[in-house]
Length: 378
Image 1: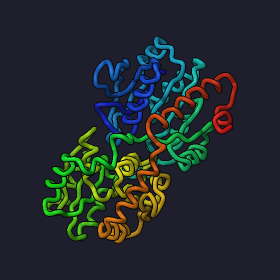
Image 2: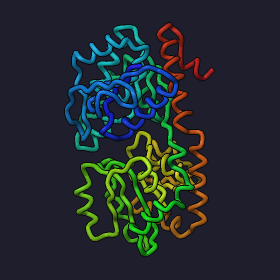
Image 3: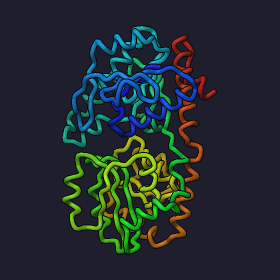
Image 4: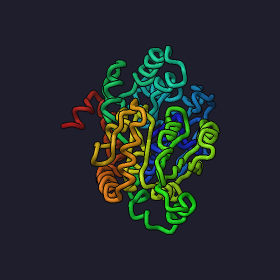
C-alpha cells in the first residue's frame, strides 16, 4: 500500500488524522505500506517508511509539488494499491502514475479546495478549481466521499465510481466516563472557577471555521467559553475577545484533548463549510451535546433534537436561544449527549477502516474489470 497524502504529522488536521488511523489499521492487519507527504516526523512513522517531498504553502496548507522522486519511490515499492488522501497536485501525480502502470488507486476527497478559494476571496476561481479537482480525481479506480452530499458534488463535476466512506472516531478515548476524572475537574476549576457553564469548540482557528461568531454568545450569563486549537486566526480572535470570558488553550492531542472535550457542557461549531466535521463526532463520542450548522458534513452527523441540534447558519443569533435552553437544563444536556454517543457507537476506527479495506479489494477487482460499487452493495 502506497499512501500519498497532502497532510501528515507533524501537521495535524482531519486528513492527517485519518491517514494516521489508516496506518494503525494496516499495521494491525499486517499490511506493508509507505507514506509520501510534504511533511513527516522522520524516516519512519509507526513502523512505516515515510518520504518527504518538496511543498509550497496554499491557504495555510503545505501543497506537495509533483517531482520525479515520487515516481521513483512508487516504482521501487511496487504497491498493490495507491491511496491518495485529499489529492491535489501530489496526489494527482500518484493517481496518474497508478493509471499508467495499471495499479488500482483509491482517491479520497476530504478538502473542498474550491470552497476555500471562495472563502478567501477568490470566488471567480471556483469553476476553475472544480475542474482541477475533477482532473486530480479522474484517473482513480474508486473515488471516496465523506458524505452523500459530497458524493453528489463529485458526480456533478464528472467523476464516476464514487462511493461514500466516512470517518471513524476513537470511542475509548472520547468517552462520557472521562467527565468524572480528576484531570477534567482540574480543567473546570481553571476555566470556570465560579462554577460557570463551559461552552467549547475544538478545531483549527481559521476563517472558514467562523469562530469569530462566538461573539454572538457572549451575552449568555454564567457561561465561559473554551477554544481548543490553533491557527492563523488566533491573534485576531484573541484581540476580538480580549476582556471577555474566553479561554484559548492552543492545540491539544491525545488524553489532553479528550479531557478538554469532557470538560465542556456544550460543544458549538459555527463553520458552515465542513465537508465532514470530525470534531463533532468526537464531541458526540464524549457525550457532549452539539450545536452545529445545518449545512455540509454536520447534516449527516447530527439528528436534530436527538444527537445534537442543527441551526441555520444564516440566522442572526440563531445559536443563542438553543444554547440557552441546553445550558439551563442538565437533564436535556444528558439526553442529547447520550443521543450523540449512541449515534457514533458503530463508527469506531476499526469498523470504519474495515470498510476502507473492502474498497481497496474492490479497486483491485475493478482493475480486473469488475464493478466494486455493485460488489459492495450486493
